Image (cartoon, rainbow over all chains, first blue to last red; front, side, top):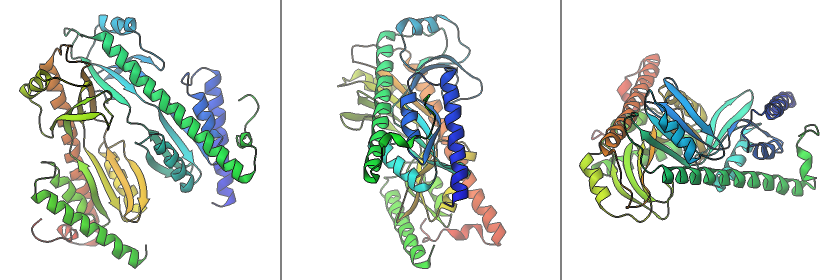
Length: 216
Length: 216
């Protein structure tokens, strides 16, 4: 990559970091994603673009993947309680109710394809098996990192149907959410140790790669 | 790509076609996938590597994504009947029972990354939104084409729990399977018309691109 392109790429990264810090300040980030994003930003040739640490949602939609004619009526990144589920079920619905648990998802731009393959290798090794390159554009190579951790459960078709076994449903949904969070932490640790390995090879200070001000 | 590499790639494609024809003969292929694979093979710079046309499975596992300590106790690519579901529920289980519906998934090798991006563009335009490049190796660029169509439903935690609403479950699972099959057909049509467009540009016979014997 020529130096002009490299400079331009670094500007994109700097902008991404600034946006992230803003989002963090206003409480717009997932409550438990910062440490993972921070780890990625420490790699010289990568920056995160969008992310989800894993979450439980309840969707009112004919199909759980629908974007239009679909409402998110519950969302929580940390835990679903039985009271919350009962509260949702007491209300009416327009379409079908789906309980969705998804594991962590990360979109990362890398400066070049070597860095993309390198991160994909690390991510797959800790269980982000549904990962790949989505596109290439002026911001670099965009990769998606994703696990197979997921539950897409039909709560009920109409509000006439009774939902049985909410206790076990809540327990299992939270268990699956937790499995996703564990994967998120494993990815963070793997990315951090990849930086340490690289820095040790160069004889550098491993904390020195994250070019951003002290308020991080 | 130099001509030696191109020859080598064509050998991989020819082997893939032969394997596919063998699988077709012995009934090993999904019952409704052939027309899709056939369409891809007609593109000069692509061959399919593995595929699923979409299916309904019932899994006995703690987690639905588990590979080990997991058994597939039901699998059907065409339709789930209420009797079949009741039959499964009458039997015992070791772990948890999950009803899983997945849309079509395709792995395709392309000769170069231009062809990979071109197919990814076509696939995304007809709703294969979870698609990307998985790896690059001597067989070419491996891409995965996948929709968001999916259901991962907890049937029951233990055989003590009663499963209510099996009629609506079966109806909705089949509906989702059908949505996946529609996407599969849309992808086939989009791939076929991409070949027609290309051949018309070259003034060729659109059927002439699939270099394989007459028994196809």
